[in-house]
Image (cartoon, rainbow, N blue to C red; front, side):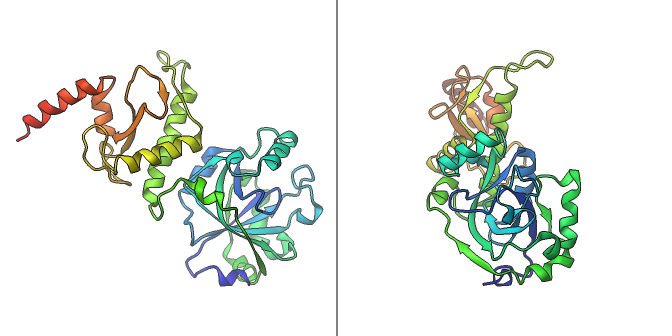
Length: 299
């Protein structure tokens, strides 16, 4: 099998440095910065685009000399689901990685399809124009679009399929085929983690203390809430449309009891942004009275 058998004419190829080939032990495309992962997630299309992983030249990062500065794997990822790498990687492998490189590669996109590149060819030979860009400090750690002049050579790469562990699909926590919903939920999780990260820091006053679950647990919780609420706002009962452009009708995560600062199961439901803003810190009982008045005056 060669790469040309996988890619269509509209497929985009990217190259990214990694420490070793993707495998059943490390079925993850890893990032050190959430912003880099989120930006790439916004442009990558699962099932159409592919990432070519390239071994670093640093012996501390890429331990096996056979992988250094070599093309290692072709991967397809779930781009809008960025989770803690430890949730995807085999436990002992992750433990060893953190012992040698603490606080590195903390975030990852799950790999849903993977192939090893036969022979691990030299990047500077097979991907001349693209590989030159790896020396630019501004591209470090980022997936780089493959230069068009390199594409013909890359399409002839021989590939061997790698089996991805079955638990990866279970950990995606996504509703099949609904990319807009996944994007909305990812946005909410990032916002919540941002609120929690700023809690207690100074501005003109002080941000209120809040706490939450991990990224992957929050994603799972909000996804389950969406399904249990059948896509309806928990405050007004009207539909929430994934990908909605009207900022007041977009999806939001509301703490049911605002005095409880935790974003946790039992204290969160999904709502419209506008409904969340209108409810503010009111109780559900006070909100229900307000909604009754609002509806009684609308007809």
